[in-house]
Amino acid sequence: MAKFDDPIERLIEYFRSLPGVGYKTAQRYAFSIIEGSQERAANFAEALTDVKRKISLCQKCGNYTDKPLCDICTSRDLKTVCVVKEPKDILAMEKIRNYTGTYHVLFGTISPLDGRGPNDIKIKELLKRVQDDKVSEVIMATDPDVEGDATAMYIARLLKPMGVKVTRLAQGISMGSSLEYADEITLSKAMEARKEMND
Image (cartoon, rainbow, N blue to C red; front, side, top):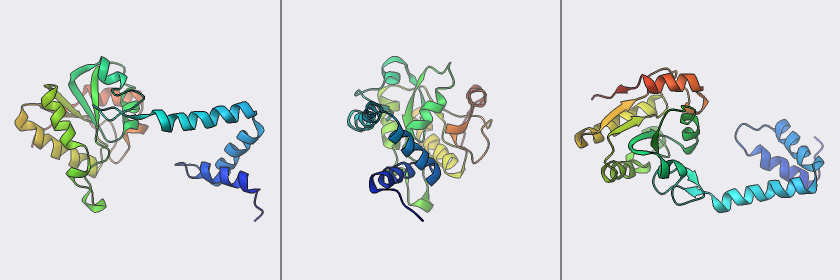
């Protein structure tokens, strides 16, 4: 199979390394850069280096931000915390326009098969936040799969003795699906119909 010159192949390989991008799509992206202006390519490269240099994690919730605390943590109700698996899930939950609380990113779920236990995700940090901010409700919004449910149950058991109301999104989101792909209406209904978690 004929190959392109090295700089083109290198660019294609970088695009291919992105999730969900196959060779043909990577090729199209590479040619879009080649056929565009020098200024556009420079701006694209600057955006990439900027995001790596300036974006870090919010010290409170774990969301991506260019400040010590993200805008959500500095402007919203600290008494309600919605627990999600990854920062990208915050973007999905923000489709619910009337949610006024904050978030907490776990950076994973409990998964013994993958060798990931409670100490490998941000549970201790959540418990500290609940205490420090006198949180009244924790909404578990982990994915509705085996790992997400196990993680939600584990956290609920830890929070109950602290007198915190722990709720779980209603099952408008189908079992085994990912939160980031749920539409606004489904998420809104799941949030409205959330149920308190019991042992």
